[in-house]
Image (cartoon, helix red, strand yellow):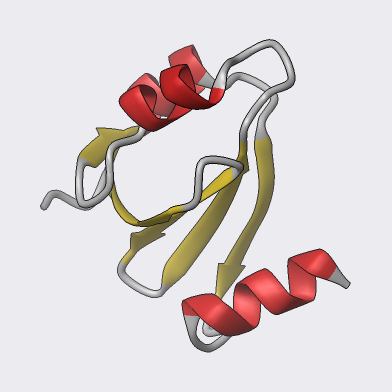
Length: 80
């Protein structure tokens, strides 16, 4: 995995958790996209470049964090 690529670590159908080194991104499914389209766009364990993500989800990024703990902790913070 190159430095410019994100690994899809978790995919719930409503949101996907992406990681690159210590950085994490949580991508929400846009309201205009079906669950099936979202899962197909970000399959679990796939690798996505910054350019691919910007093209697929130009305004969907919820959060980018560094050194913020486990994916579960990131999700808990997003839900509160």
